[in-house]
Image 1: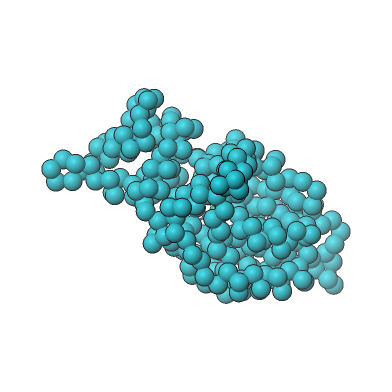
Image 2: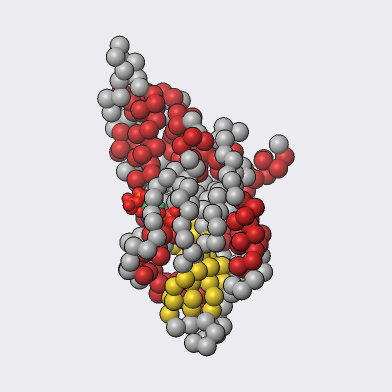
Length: 287
Ligand code: G4P
């Protein structure tokens, strides 16, 4: 596998989550809407199997809306509610309250508030959401995963108490494509990846589904029949990533492709679809 990712403290996080879940009524798992399955930590689903749960597909402003709808349908089942979210949401607390009421109706009271935990891998947007709910900057936000943040407890309303993730829930790479998608999104540390390889994988996927967006961003015209590395060279040329002697600066080109994807400059893009994910999982099991 190309992404070398050895997250630490997984067992500690698992123990903390397990202990905390005993007293929790509803689990909100925050996912990245551009890579919902890859950004899930399977440990959460496993530990929270019997709890009402909410899948919050965050950063939906960066994701392909049609594919987000597919994922929301895929996640919805008895006991699970799926919602789309993004940082521009005017009243995220209200949205979460409604989802909690739907998934665990008539459970919270003023005397015994519903206890809800919010979990998710680093960089998925938990602090941003909590800051927006509280109206304060109480949690540190940062794009490089790895910063441990303190425990928090917030009253969403009189009947619902929200807890922040216990411990650090690192992503788990369960299929190779998931590793690339996590790396492309910035959810795994820079040292774990070869940016050129990640950018090429990203480009190959975008060429398949988002040729129009690539052309609009990089003005590369018709890419039919081109290989991913040829498109990468074209992008480098167009963007002036040239080394002395006229060769394309591939490292710089890879970085700009990744930066453009992460910021949404290339458009609203999603890197996996439910049917693809199923096929990747099957292939990984058979391998
Ligand atoms: P975490 O607590 O789960 O680790 O994630 P955090 O809130 O720190 O968010 C990680 C990055 O994702 C931040 O960017 C944040 O602004 C961005 N983000 C969070 N939610 C959304 C969303 O719904 N849409 C978009 N487009 N971005 C979102 P950053 O560059 O590290 O920070 P900053 O530039 O906002 O200061």
